[in-house]
Length: 116
Image 1: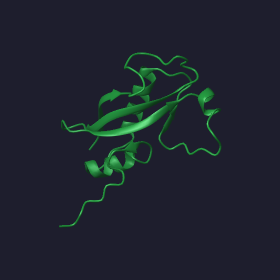
Image 2: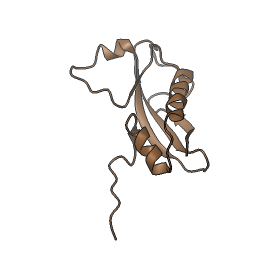
Image 3: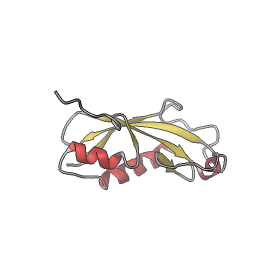
Image 4: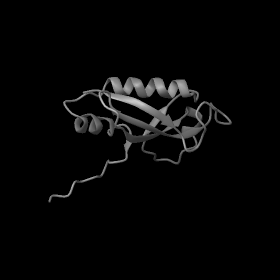
């Protein structure tokens, strides 16, 4: 099973527009990703951050959930997500989503189904 990017957006920035300084920014991204064979999707999130913006992060800083780009661009974001998705396959969606959650924030990351 493979994952597919179904949609991408940001609560911080309209799709297609650029931040005030594309070389010094961080932008929260939410991507709807789901199995390539079906309509369903789940939300995975990450921040796009540039090297100049990393310099302003407080030390120490964890970097899981961050995508480092030299300059912010929607094309660069989508290319990076699609490249990641090509590396995350599995026997079922649960296996694929767990692989994705090692890099991206996942809406069901801490979800534990209740036994009935």
